[in-house]
Length: 98
Length: 223
Image 1 (cartoon, chains in turn brown, blue):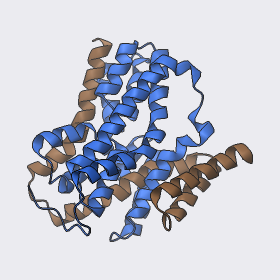
Image 2 (cartoon, one colour):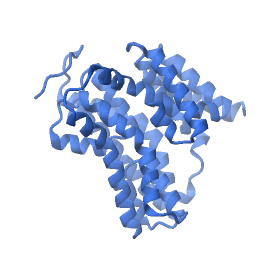
Image 3 (cartoon, rainbow over the protein chains, first blue to last red):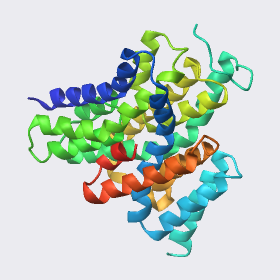
């Protein structure tokens, strides 16, 4: 099988995973309210699951910067929080050499 | 047209949807394009031709899938195991796609089929946020998605052409931009019912799976 075929199959698998969840949900039509409550929790759960290992396995400055962003996001809009987070990370890494 | 779930603010115009979509995606572009540039260099280094490298970015459009695929191709493993790995790193997208079901009410079928193709992590996160604030309409989704897609492919071309010249993205603190963005979105949902319980349980499950089974299954189990 050529490289191009493998690439296209991977594209198909990726698309399948992105369409699959929706199609399954639509097929079952009216969803149970428990399922609905579960899906409501998905954004919080998946996004935090993506970040959690990075916090525990990375350098401690990474965890500090992400923690700082979490705190700032309670008060500030998204963009300023993230920019301050990146700035603090660069400061800790390059200026303070931590 | 199906009904919108009770939107607290008046429905923005088509132009505003498009402008908001582009505005919201700009910081994300800065965060993800380095991965596309690096992918260009990485894939060429692993023996893919420029055409194959570009084809991967155009047809797959997913950092994790593309890196996993190229990495495994170099190890001479059977095709089914490459496909299984690509599915594993994408398993979270099944959850994304399922949880988008309630907010895609204003999309036609062909719009939905196109929308799934663009459903990458930040696209998913911003769609939920938009649905939460003003309701999600196709104009916003595709303004956001196409801008990100084109910058992904464009950055990949840059990587193919000049890949050797770039250094580490961590020098500029950009490697953590995406996690920071995700955490802001997570805390944006803090008024949802049982926020702390969901957050705690998910982090615990993700960390347990990460240590016991290994990446990327922690995302599936955390979800």
